[in-house]
Length: 334
Picture 1 (cartoon, rainbow, N blue to C red):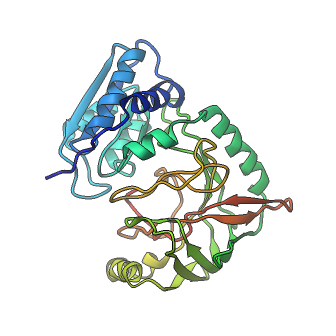
Picture 2 (cartoon, rainbow, N blue to C red):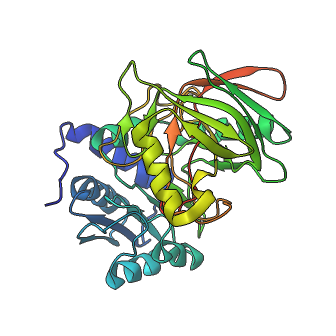
């Protein structure tokens, strides 16, 4: 039986939904807005639907049973609803980010955002923010790192890892999706790159998908050489990577992302129940999954997405406190 959310602060949830509809998507009167949800995300979905109705009379909500895994295609009527909408929001238990249904919809001109595995805590914390300010923060970080040959990340816990972006572009996820075909995950706020290579040690003291927020005294250490994870000091996480490698080969050990959090409205990492963790703020944590256009090498069966507090040495010589999702195998889920 699917676990459903029990909303505690309905006013905060309503305010967050208003931010998503009005500021992030910019839904206007006369536009069609579809909220796609499932049994687990229904309370958040209903809040978004109410907010959408305040913006346009052409709002509908579509609900279906949770998919079997992240990236599983939704039923055909759900895909059709996404494709016909001007704007969409998808708070679902399993992610629709990297599905054909979502990509076909945005390729056809729909704009929208997915909210996979969303919880009340993450929803209200991550959307209690000024998304114009987040967009400005993304622009500042992109300007600082855009021409960097190397990015070094360190922390008192022992992280010391250097990323080399090479020719791969930096991207910004602002959460502002006002143009046809635009797509994001919410809550948003991140600057990220798929580095060509990386070497060093990454100590996680924040969150690991799917384990959520680590206990206060717990850390997990990853060793990385030439862009590949070579060792993990945690049996459970190492076992997950080995299981993925049995299906995908060495691609399962690929280090696929460096992300710098830009959601200035959030200052602490927030745990999710059974999926990724979303939170950021003051450049101290990373919030979100990747759009389908995010470059990857290989196509692994899943990912281990990790976040920690650390210091990024910026190319101009300054340093900023941040966290980064450093170790994740190439994925089709998001």
